[in-house]
Amino acid sequence: MRIAAIDVGSNSIRLLVADAPADGVITPVLRDLQTTRLGQGFAGGRLADAAVHRTLDVIKDFVRQARRAGAEKVVLAATSAVRDAANREDFIHAVYGATGYALRVLSGEEEARLSYLGVTGALGDVRDALVIDIGGGSTEFIWPGQGGIRFRSVNAGAVRMTESGFGSGQIRAVFGDILRDIRPDSPADMIGVGGTVTTLAAMAQEMRTYDPDKVHGYRLTAAKVGKLYHALRKLPVAARQKMPGLQPERADIIPAGALILLRVLQGLNMDSVLVSEADILYGLIIWEAREMS
Image (cartoon, rainbow, N blue to C red; front, side):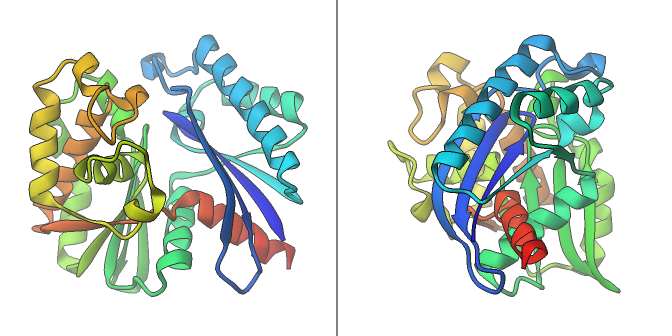
């Protein structure tokens, strides 16, 4: 069965079309990503009109692409920016009016569970690992604890931290509670998903052209994250945009995302993170395939 998933995030809108047997590994057919910065200027608690219009245009285009690719089912899901917006219902209605598809707004826990489902669908048994998904508006943590798998969402991501004028002390304070909760369970490894982590993996390999096969399974060290962060924060945005592996549209927010990852690695005394291309998009498709079987 061919299924399309569209992830409406705070920073970017992503499309994955894949063949998805109910009891097998999914096979990607088409991917696309457009940066619309839906969460831009969110300090007032509302999605900005300009950001909404940019995002609707991309969603409509992605739905058309999915149909042309032969998708039998199209799933749309939104995360932090829409979840927290005072005008979320207006946005949901606008998406339906533009596409004819309902937009599912995920809770923080649902977002974490679907990211975990995507990772396990691609990497298999990761019961001893912490999974971290650094998004634009929030960061999700999934890890093995007493009584089973634990899921937590922290309302801080690369866009939100950038717009709030992030600092090292601020990020330590925001993530302090969750790191204290994770430490007693002592996860053996860390798996990272989301645009911040995959971008840093591409930058570490100095990719001129993004190659998901080289990003997936890459072992990104804390030392390399630290070097990248310190290099990034010394450069103006225009200079960052020329760095290999970095999408120009992400140049303003990547320092905040890198610092979040660095502080989490340091706070848990881990020396590296395993990068996964499989994330919430994979999770949405796997879930839908199971529901339709």
